[in-house]
Image (tube, rainbow, N blue to C red; front, side):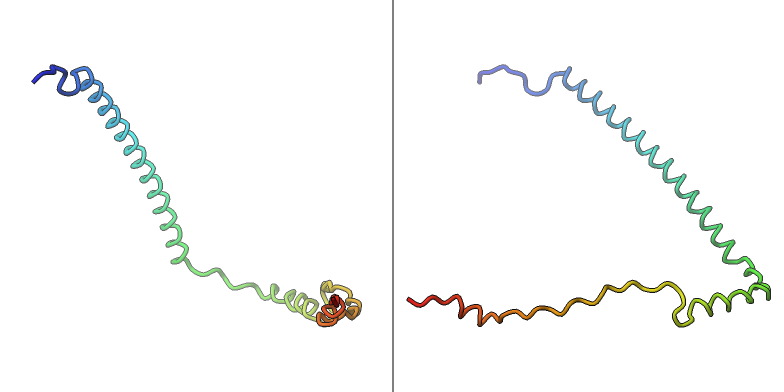
Length: 115
């Protein structure tokens, strides 16, 4: 058995690989911490929104409208729904009567050339 070449990575290559691995681990930890921070911010925001919605659901309903508010509504409704009231809807002008066309059978006969 001949050949006395190296049997694997050198010590220097192992150190470089370990350093690269440590850098990757540190980067992953940093990314995980940032994700956790963003999660906590989102969670706090969602909780605040939930609490606000819950308070609104449990709050007393708004007071009924005053009697004077109902006076203006019928006047608006009567104009709006009266016959001919409101904006006229645009309609296209009627089309001219279509010109009669020859049937496809007639067109086929006129194209026939006797031999």
